[in-house]
Image (cartoon, rainbow, N blue to C red):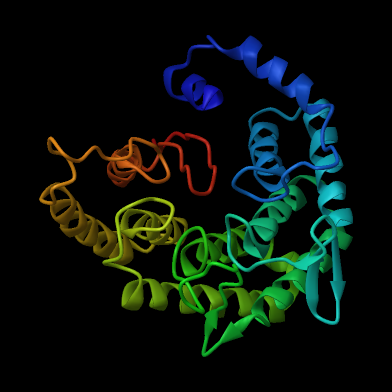
Length: 291
C-alpha cells in the first residue's frame, strides 16, 4: 500500500517506513510463519519481486532468494502429491492458500533469479495441482468445503487463472512446449468455468462476482483481448446494478467494510475496471503507468 501511494502520487512520504519494513524482513522466514499467498511467505515474496522490478537492489534480491529457498525447502513432492512439512498434509489447490499461489510466487522469483532448478520444480508442482481434479474441476480439499470444487479467487478457477496466466506471461519458454500448452489449456478451462458457473454467488473480491470478474479482466488485459475486456465490463455493470439494488445498507444491516470481503473491494473492482493502472489487490501487482 505504501509503495502504491508513492507510485500514484509521486510523493515519498512513507519511504522511511518502507525501508524499516524491509529491514524487519531480514529476520524472516521463521519457524511457525504462515506459508501461503494471502498472509505468508508466498505473498511476501511476490511483493519483494515487485519492489525489485522497480529498483534492482541487492538487499531485496537476497531476500527474494532467501524466501524462494525457504518455500522450496518447506515442500516435498512424493508420488505426485505436494506436501507441506509444517502440517504434514497435502497442499490444497487454489491461489490464496494452495499450490497456485505458490506457483505464482515462484514464477515471480524466477523472473529475478532465472534459476533452472526452479523452472523444473514449477513444472512438477503444476502437474501435482492438475492431478487434483475431477471432471475438469480442481478439487476443494478444505475440511469445511461446501462442495467438491470451487470457482473463486481464493479457491478454484479464479485464482488458478491468475496463476496460469502469470506463468505463461513470465516464463513460458523456460518451462518448455508441453508445460506451455498445459498452462494455456488450464487458462482456457478456468475462463470457461468462470463464465459458465461462477457468477451469481455473492459479491466479494475473495469469493464473489467482483473477484471472479477481476480475475477475468486481468487475464484479458494481459493477453490484449479487447472483446473479453468489453464482455467483463458489461458483466460488471450488471453485477454492480444488482449489488446496489440489494438491501445491504439499512437501519438493520451494516455491510462489511473490508477489502476482500466487503464494499471496499467492490469500489476497488469498479475503479480498476475504469483504470488499468491502479494496483491489483488480487495478484498483488503494483500501480503502473498506462500512458
